[in-house]
Length: 200
Length: 200
Image (cartoon, rainbow over all chains, first blue to last red; front, side):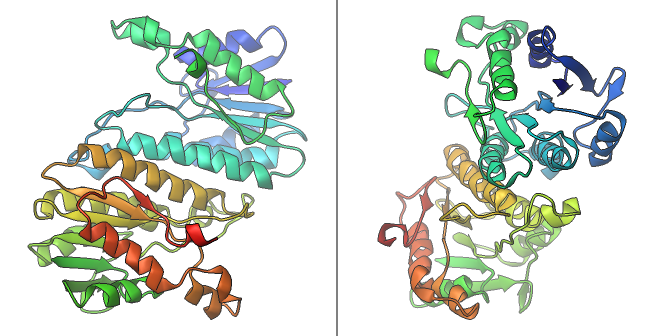
């Protein structure tokens, strides 16, 4: 398959590209590099599909989050992730509907707060909203298209990069296997895959 | 209590005002009328709290939805409800945190699609995202403040207004009782109330 990976240079994206490379043609896209896309800019999503054709699957690993307390001064700071992670991924699905080959798939990234976390309310809105979108959108996709989401909790390599104990996190390679499973399994549609959740 | 009802002239808002009026001081706010507010305009929310002081509770019944298929041409049409129902209600909670009296409450409107409905994916994102926001935001509110949501399915009077059978809907008065319960019950915090769901 020909697969676009958005956010290919991130911690999860790098692992996803590594997991796909043996069996698929991978187009690495991101805010840097040869194939540029900015999830917060819908026009750049149009440009992506205009420049890369005959695509079977799109994976978005570009959704980073940030904690923000309810008392954050500016609405813009409070709603971090609105344009890129939330709307960007919705816009990506809408464009994929027009451009993917029959039977193709889109796999988004949501996320999981494994315990009550002050400052997580807007992030919870984004993650849970995206998951509801995926479940509902899957029922109205034409041409055998599929949409799914992967909801990683903490990623081991991210925790270690922050100087924390990586043992509480899911290895990026395990998260990547969830993306590969969503892409390669025709029966997986409208699902939210939660790598690592069974082991915690 | 002194209670602002946003969307006071709508089908649900009218019933909420009627249910509150005997026991509370109600300020009717909306896009028309003496106290103006536009949920899609954060500055108008600031103006609302600047003009009405000593408020104990805010109820928002202003969130209308609309079905839009994934193939809708414009992103703006597809994301109907983004600025008013989704972000407007988030912005309302943030302002209420600063302006409500100690122990006050905010009650939002989400919504329920009782069966898979083509064109409901963005609406599902809005409703489910708001509910996740309410649950998470409730845990970080200061000064004994509370936030809840009421999730009405179809309202009987709305169905009848569309020329459909009202029997499948919940009477607006029953939906209104859920809003009153959220406002008057100190133990109700971070909850999503679903009037009528037990009877269907």
